[in-house]
Amino acid sequence: MDFSHTIYDSTGQDNFVSLAQASSAYSAHHMNTFMKQLLSTIDLDTLGSIYFRHLSMALPLAKIDLASVKEAMCFGQEKISAPCIVTLPFVNTAITTSGENIFAVYSFYEELERQERNTLATMHQIFAKPLQHALEFERLKLMMTKDALTGLGNRAGFDEASKRLSSRCNRHRSQFALLVIDLDNFKSVNDNYGHLEGDRVLQEVASHIAHALRHSDEAFRFGGDEFCCLIDCETSTDLLAVANRLHQRVNNCKFMQQKNISCSIGGAIFHPEENLETVFKRADEALYRVKLTGKNAYLAA
Ligand SMILES: Nc1nc2c(ncn2[C@@H]2O[C@H](COP(=O)(O)OP(=O)(O)OP(=O)(O)O)[C@@H](O)[C@H]2O)c(=O)[nH]1
Image (cartoon, rainbow, N blue to C red; front, side, top):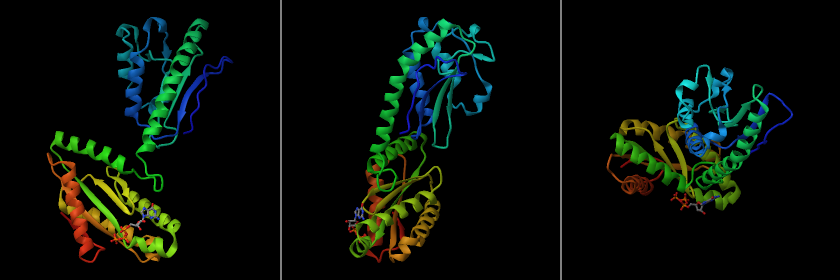
């Protein structure tokens, strides 16, 4: 991860400090939760009544819930008058959604007294390490759920995501679907072209699967030449459409055509109160039936 932080720039530039920059996937939600935890540890007396004018130019980027920051700071409302906002030394937390440079924390200090700046420098020293650790922790967590070869989620990632999805579906009485994709005769690629070429096929297939899905869907490499997708859809007709799209896209990709191989797909819709094992078993059984009856097709449970 590209991580850097600078503690207190005493040379007097406008940008007091760029506390942290990270390029790992980092959501606004994570950041919000983390900031709330951080804020709850602040000694408000130490912080005193440091006020910053919030720079409106940064607002469009600011995904953090500023209201919750105010609330967590526990300052009396009468002290906060628009357009001023009381925040931590982190005046603006800018979070982009592109996945690159996910957040940057800036403070602007030109209006501060010397003593206030010193307090800020101390605050930064206090927060930089925990922030760095939290980021590192998130990065490691992310690595643990990613498949190194394809960049898709791995089996642990799938377990985590499917549990999250199933509890949401149970709560909202909604549904989602599962597709299990297995390459046909993939072993022949390894045997005839070598393991490295086999790896390349898996990478290309993974990329095509990921690109064929919508934003709300997720793809994983379950292991070997087997992939899984969690699909946001509720009817077998919709699922059939997604499965056909994936089937075509994977079969038509360059390496699959060159190596003359195909894929088989099994699908099942998760119903509220069904458990994850049974929906997976149903999709896997459908896949197994495709394999037994000639491969290269889609079947729903
Ligand atoms: N190159 C490569 N091969 C792998 C990897 N993981 C598993 N495999 C190979 O993938 C193959 C999967 O086995 P099978 O599913 O039985 O092979 P298949 O020829 O696709 O058989 P069917 O599914 O019945 O069509 C085995 O030959 C494994 O050695 C990997 O990371 N890279």
